[in-house]
Length: 298
Length: 90
Image (cartoon, rainbow over all chains, first blue to last red; front, side):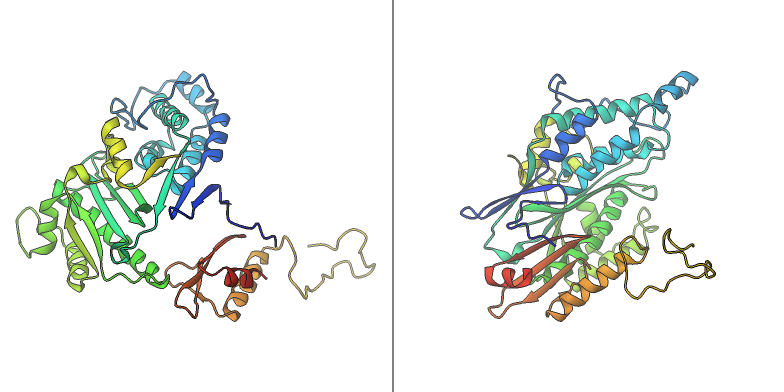
């Protein structure tokens, strides 16, 4: 076994520490440059500012299937490219998690349009290889772990399912994030939001336990949600014809709230960084989301 | 299963050897490595986190912690106390 001294790199992530300011930064510049080279993106390629522009309306049947297209797509390393992006997304690049989630839905049968979207993401990475996560020393330890969540109603064009997105920050930097297609169809925005609350609460319970093991005692975790109706649904025992079918999730979330371990709080849409995990957002909104959770340009 | 070249015993070609210790490249080797690692950590007074099995931690006398994160064969040690880090590495 070899001792490598002060940690500089772990599983492909570069670690930069500033002991005076009390910050730790994680970047993946080397890895990203390597994958860009592998997929033929070089200095001549024009970078783009958002990972997926709204004009990509991805669906399973994007163009008619011809023998020619099939032959063309058989040569394209679609799964390789998506896999490479996914690793970056899991480690430090939560800014592309929604987009990776979009393109990975078509892994079994990619079309030309999907490949164009993957190339667009690679071009976005090309312009942002120096982006990373920053964690800051925080003296107010009692409010260290904070969660944000959001959902996008019927974002998926094939089966009309909704998207869940959440991010948890510790020491002001993101530690856990997810952007995923919900497993069942939601009948209303409130319901989509409600399913996202359930997912976020499950993650919050685990993280709360983990940081307690690590010696950070926090009385409760605040999870911020921008949907007032979902919050009311959790807090009040209202019975309504449009919500009466949401049964099991109801009881789970309410029970957790009653125990006081995790609390659901209201946040304005403008201050919610998870917008970028559930939908394609504009460049300005996108960078605002970065600032909210300490994604920085190195 | 056959005897390796150069180690064939005439008359007993269908015999196999019994391993007394684990070897490189065996299907069971990763498990053995992990077991040994886990035993080592527990012997040194560390606790494995119930929430994430790749995290080991120990509370130090001054109330601060030392953490060890395990990722296959890659490790990350974090603590406020330099002495404790060096002690764990040794």
